Length: 261
Image 1 (cartoon, rainbow, N blue to C red):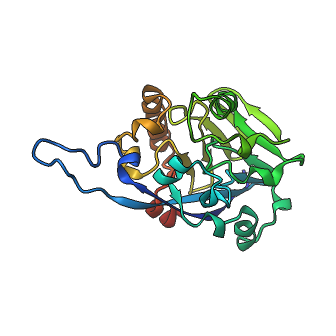
Image 2: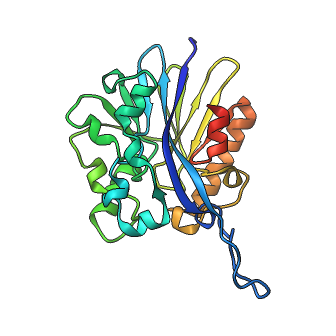
């Protein structure tokens, strides 16, 4: 197996109360009815995976107009992508030495608005966009009705895209890249095991926003489609990490991202 190249793209910062990210962080009690809140900085990232077969983009980040009314106000109030306008997909790819035309395939870990906001760049092209079978219908259900999740915007993904639907628990995408179905945060969340000699990487993504989630502290209920499924997926990730010795890449943990990058 030839080596697989990884390039990490920093797509900016989201500000949010830690209680959304780690459940129960700021909880009032009988003796402390006004607990302190931790308003923290989280990273939005993408990943370019170079294989002998093709160049793969992992996720597309937020829409650059996220803070200018593109995102629903209640959601932006909770999760403010404060510098989205400074992080277009084309611009961040260029800083890393890539052009949009260099991308041969896109993998959508899921279709939340901080991950699918750059999909418009691939509308009308033949670039395959990989998404899990359980994610696409739930995204449309959420975006087109008053039910489901507020974190899906039809304007992100309702384009003429070359969808490639992933089925099952795992999917061989390319030599050294195995996609993993990790339901819980959303029905069709995808992670990946990138097998590089001596340096495997387990892309956990939004299965665990931060290290505390990976250690077992749940995200807020509003961030989980199914808590039981989330715990099963977490156990699967930990098993894979033990078996492979892989480093992990979490969904929005800034310190883990900077260390890994």
